[in-house]
Image 1 (cartoon, rainbow, N blue to C red):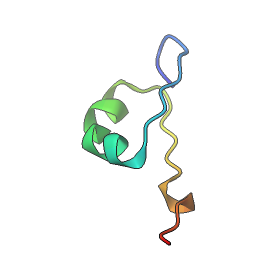
Image 2 (image 1 turned 180 degrees about the vertical axis):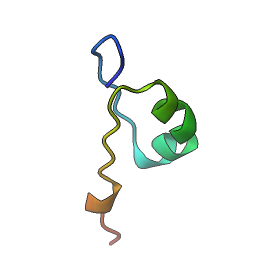
Image 3 (image 1 turned 120 degrees about the vertical axis):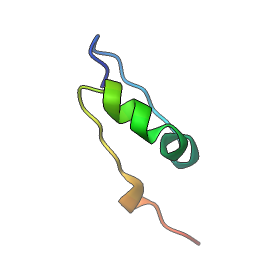
Length: 39
């Protein structure tokens, strides 16, 4: 969740590559990586 109220959704790859900047600017950061499974 951004300060202005907007949501950003990222795939795992891009979320990981931008993690530090996203966490720095986010009001709320919700990570559901643990729900992914490898098949």
